[in-house]
Length: 115
Length: 112
Image 1 (cartoon, rainbow over the protein chains, first blue to last red):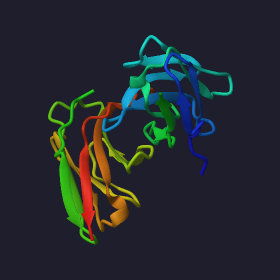
Image 2: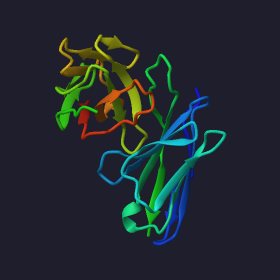
Image 3: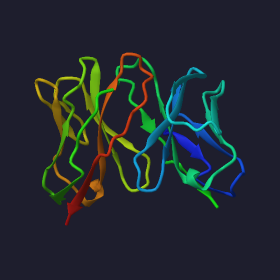
Image 4: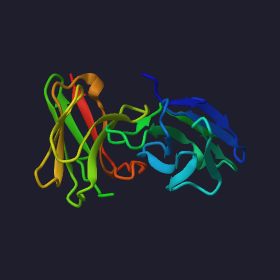
């Protein structure tokens, strides 16, 4: 079965640069979630989108922004990168209103290293 | 969403059942119990979820107490590949769009 696809899988950026992560949800899923997981930490929710509109907002820094496009893929844009932004970034997706209880499925993540 | 409490770590012998407990004493009537696991630096993997009835799938069983204040995830025959951090999460599903809030989880080590 198709899963959540994230790209790139690995990214190295310098401080103050900008990075963009992409997420392609499971086909027909209409909700996308972004999470950040720092070294040795648990995943932290950043932001989510439903039907291309922002749905929930977590602990997303002001330097970060995200959007969901008409084909439901999503992009997370991170500017003025700091060393502390080095983390594993997960995208997840779900389909609202299904008998499966709106289960959320995760991608394999994108590793961002800021040097 | 209700807060959950899990033991930080557990060991289990390979081939034996692994029983992972979770307390969610403040759970509301419209909150489901979800279990996910994360094998080192991989994406969290959905295992199972339930509202008030016990549930079973090909991966695990979920036992929810009658008062719904606690639950147990059971891996019937643990293998080395089940070594992971297991997260118990309660989540309101009614709106269908609520994100998952991860707590600290239980680090399960399956021993050969």
